[in-house]
Image (cartoon, rainbow, N blue to C red):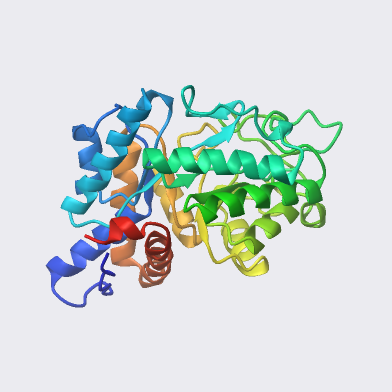
Length: 349
């Protein structure tokens, strides 16, 4: 895979600059789609929007053979279009959030993993099956801490125990998957284990102060950072004591100052799905906040006009704002760096 020769707006030929801006915008998008084959919708996402990745859900999956062909055809489409290889992701946490069902191995989920050996076993089998199917990124593990006595919305998805236990088991999953070339994504920073409402349907509010979050909720994400996790996904939760205007997934303070600067995280930062009800802003506003917050990958998981709106707004901002262009180049360098590191076979074309 050749590194794009990025040019700032206004330098070089207009055709070349336009192409680079389209490419920079597209690589920031991880998109969902309808269907189980390389259909016109998926071809459009790859060829026209130059998407950096796709995310799969149960309706996209019929069988191991069909899934393998879908992933292979999507990567071939990207190669034929002169694009970098795709991130191909899904959520395979085990238990209540598992996109791959029988005949793939089904696990009970994080609440039933109690030892490092069990964590490694889950991660090894899962990574092998994902790799065989052509999937290269798992939106797991959940690194949230659910305190005892709290009716946490995450109680069926978290490792049971305190921050130290979550850190230990979660990093076992991360290291095992990534040793097998499956990129791991720790979620949901800075922690949603204390929340009782579902961000798929509401904008949950967590009125915890920064010291409390640092002492418990954020510790597993520090451990994930130390384990060289590929990605950290932001929550859609509103933390008024951290940012009284923006939820975490749109917050320059939480994503930029706290995660990038204080924690020193150098990997990929992802939003959660922007189609969730917790996002109560229009897509153009979301895109600007995401770019200003130094967030790398934008998840839009459902077909609809938001996908095109996000791409076009990102191009407009890249072309018109030198500061956002510079931040955009940093994000693209991170994205392409992880693609070189984890997708070497697909780079040899």
